[in-house]
Length: 375
Image 1 (cartoon, rainbow, N blue to C red):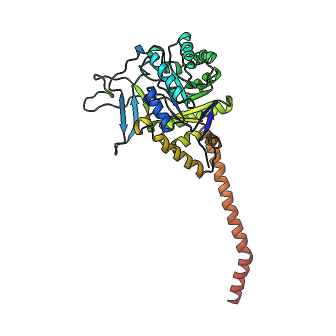
Image 2 (image 1 turned 180 degrees about the horizontal axis):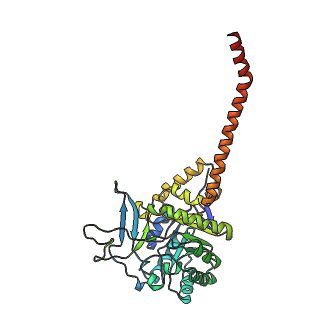
């Protein structure tokens, strides 16, 4: 029977499904609920040392629905990182680890472009017993004006410097979360891995405008009639996420073997997860999917992923991790492969025709001649 158990950067998980940083990990209570439902790991909502500057607005979500149905296919948010004080997080993260000592709790952290702040938050979180860190270099809205989030992630030089500060003091695994709002995601990936990060998480939300209300002529979500571009997620972003995960997987395979990858972007089913793993992901994060369907979604995802593995006779996740990456190439190579395939098919067809002609000109020719002679 196949198993979903996996070990990533020394972290033992019952399955590869991880609660992504965001509302589903907004406090200790819901983190515990996620563990109770069977999630492999939980990444808490991004925390910082000074939450007093974090002020959320209402409404802060926008939804894109299918034209012929009410199904939500796209989700935009302008929600900021956690607005709860670091002291509260200290109490709750410690309480979670005390209650679930064998489960994997990952702290998502973000700070301004100051070495002392990054060092302090890493050291204080480690003292609480968290199992790993995810560095939020990727939030596309709200905090870039403070040189946080994607303002760092879009600059490989800054990203490498900050990752270096963290890895100089961290004794637990460190993942760097990538922004998709760049031309080549390979560049910040390399910067993070050069600085010592054990893993990459990708992708965070895509900077977007969800739409315009054609009655009010105001963009959504509307806050006192105004808005700001937000982060786009949900199933609609999955094709973009798959492409970027594949690109990161090739960098890891070719340049940083042994490093890990956590895939994110529109995952709602076990088959979605299988695609990310086939493209090189070690774990798969879910955030918007939990907001849509609830924490119990993990049980259905586990069952479907196991069914996929059983169908293909895979016993472990490693048996198929990255299998599909080998089938990506250049357009030039695609043209060459198709020309060769067509030439081979034509040659095979011609050979069959010659063999048929040879057969007819032998025994069939004699029989036809005898029939005519008797005629």
